[in-house]
Structures are given as C-alpha cells and as structure tokens.
Length: 304
Image (cartoon, rainbow, N blue to C red; front, side, top):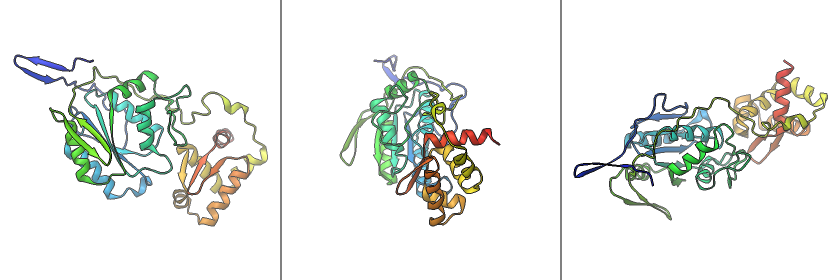
C-alpha cells in the first residue's frame, strides 16, 4: 500500500504530485485540464479523422469542464493506447479512466484498453484477450505497462453517449469520500485515492509500426517481381497499400473517400492486392494489411 495521505495537525490531505517537465510526453487528440485531478476521460473515436461528429467533441468537452486531468479520443488499439499509457503514468494523480463512446467495430480500442488493464501483454507484446486485429504495444517497456495497470481503474461506459452520465462518472472520481456509481450492470465505488507514487516519464522514441516484422520475419517472405511490378505501376493500388501500412487497417468507406473510388473500383483493386501475393485481408467492411503487404511497402520504398 502506497503512502498517499499527508497528515498536518488534525487534518489529513490526499497526496498530490506535480507532473514533471515535459508532461504530457505524447501528443494526441486530447486536451489538458486539471493536472491534480484523479480522472482522465477517453472517448472512443469510431469514425474517420476528417469526419468527427460534434457529439464526440462535446463529450470531450464534458470531461474538460467537469475537471478531468486529460480528456480526448482513442481511435486505434496499438499506438493510440501506447500514447495513453505514457501520458497517464507521467501523472500519478490520475487513478481512473472514464471510457465512453460507441465502440469502433474494426479496431476495438475500448475493449482492448480494458483487456490491457485486466490481462497485460504476452511475450510478443500483444494485449492478452483482445479481439482486435493488431493489439500490439511494442514501443513501451514492460515496466511502464505494469505501472499503468496498477495505477489505473477503468470506468467502463462503452456505448454511452449521454453527457449527463459521463459528467456524473467523472465527478464521482474526485470525491473525498467514497460514492457509488453504476452504469447498466457495472457498479463502482469511487473516490480520490491520491497520487500513485512518483511520476514515471517515458516518451516513445522508436516507433515500431509493424510489430510482426520487428522480429526479422520479413526476411523469410518471398515476393515475385511480377507481384511488385503489378502494384508499383498502378497508382491507386500503390496508394492503398502505402496508406494501409501506416494505419494497418481501414474501413472500405474510408478508402473510397480518400482515393475517390466507386464500390466496384475499390473491390477490383482490393481483389488484385489480395491475389497478387496476399497483400491484404478483406472483410465485410474492413481491409487489413498483411505481413506480405508490409514487406511489399518496404520493397517499394527501396525501389524509388
């Protein structure tokens, strides 16, 4: 048990820590509020970056107006979670994350964040129990992950878009005396427990965006010159595969908008990418790059 209570005469105070210089260490889609607040608000972003609805922005502002330390959005189950972990452990005053918004069906970032706190990561840095396609955290040390898991309690409001409910959840987290809060069948006893030790400052320096290639397995892949040439000479296909290499997966509607394609044209190019070396996996509404696709992108970079 950490000593997080300060006694001064007949009075007791919850210990608070001033965040270190450079806090928050990672940039992102969030706003900074009260550094001494015990709660951060995380709103799931389940749409495109360029089509963020006002209702999600309003939820972020609810967190800020209610007194959260950080209030922002989470879109991906990998680098997005890594940034949250780094920013949270740098401020030991933050003891809760209120997680709300509709789940993103492709990335499943909300479920994955919960599984991280519950289960941690395996030897491949994959979040245990997550059903997301790429729930890897290769850019942060194990001790940072374990500190995050010990420091944080998740208030699971996934599916909630009600500003009043979110307001109440955030407010309950910074009460001096414990208070009961419930959402659907989930029940919590909330209060401000004080700071969790000293800050743990970690900034992501080397970003492994392709964890399945980080162990050198790309050297085992063999692509024919015909496959490489077929993609290289088609600007749409080359654009799609390069775009996917940066985000790992995308909605079909997102690709249609970005590359100005009809349904037929998009499906044609995706089918070609799948046939020419298995560069993508195609699902009902989602497209995901494979390790062969990532290797192809590396080859295309070398052949510029």
